[in-house]
Image 1 (cartoon, rainbow, N blue to C red):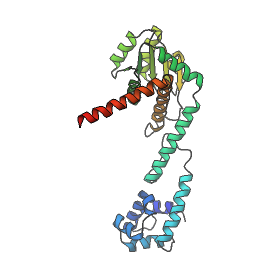
Image 2 (cartoon, rainbow, N blue to C red):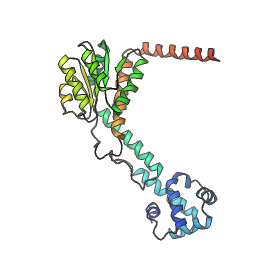
Image 3 (cartoon, rainbow, N blue to C red):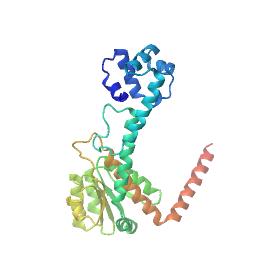
Length: 287
């Protein structure tokens, strides 16, 4: 008998047994390490109810239930390989299965993103940033949040990324930039209207442009100097959240930051050590 399926379907279960089944599914990892008394106490269920449920599942008792249930959980975990980026879990998954599916999706997304990169691409993007007088970045919604994290990382190595939230201010940045600057535009879909508007200004002013997107056929991709590609796994109309796209963006920006850090590695390491010493000294003074 498939215990997990039986617990989910709850055929011929009493109300108490249904509540117990829900508890077991929601706390599966904990249950296989519990004694019958522990489960009784944690689920507010009598030991007799637990035994009755085991009997309905054609098992001799709770000990046999734990052995079989543990085997099924292990088998289910091994089957978690290719996760749907739009709907990575379902209502019947236990909390631990949800966590494993999100982990698998994250790992798969990072692997796919990394496979899209190459030395030539990263070198060109990094050199554009390193030689620029000023760096400014444009993104909206979740993309803006990820760019803000990139902005904070870059501050640690003495590089300021101009980043503003409102569309008028973004237009102002683009309008006042020069050919000695560099623009980093971020849009997973590649069709964000605000990004297209900024891109047109950048193109007109001949400002070097780095574009991060999963859409390599959009207008902005066609006019960008460098495209940092992202895997196109999500459908904005079908997904329950931007799990994959945000993981890909975060990874791509981390890679970009790490490659920039590497260009002045010793200097940046020394600067980091000095900051740590200053922080330690300030903390001591406060005491």
